[in-house]
Length: 148
Length: 76
Image 1 (cartoon, rainbow over the protein chains, first blue to last red):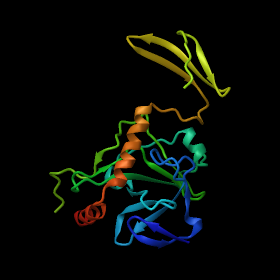
Image 2: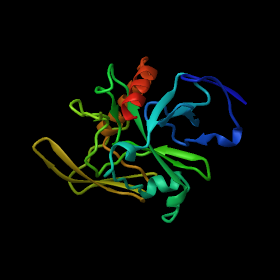
Image 3: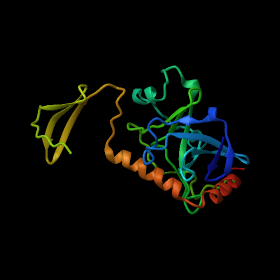
Image 4: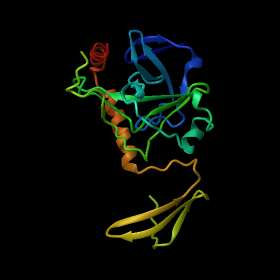
């Protein structure tokens, strides 16, 4: 099937790739079906694109690419929604939504509320890490950083 | 909205299985105890609101693709 996407125009997808978010996402509770798309020339980012609404499209990173010590816990309420058992670690992908600012240095990553996807059963949920010291706005880069 | 008066030590039952107990009322603060199955998600509303606002902000940025290009160059 063909869908319209915010960043990649019209994209042909396979229905079997659709991920169901039974609770939607906070702020977008009615958006239940998403697909994860990659950028051809950029490995660091993926897109969480709503099937129904073109404008609902999040840019995500693998949090461990930016924060090596990032730690999460998926509690029972979310395990149930995600159809996961305690030993199902291998089925899980974890993403963090980024909010781009006017510059790279103003861009932030939401470590408080990661997107958890059960790859095998195609179900996802944005969980909120209550007991962790994370916020919705961690800088992706520090300004004085020099990577040359 | 349903409004109920409760004293310290009293509680309410929601849907036969979630119990909310008033533990303490002091200096304008109410301490609640919540007995519910672990499959129930319980959050402070301001935390949920914060995530909702950040989600909304994150899809409103129009220059995302430019920023991604810059990031790609930087990570080389």
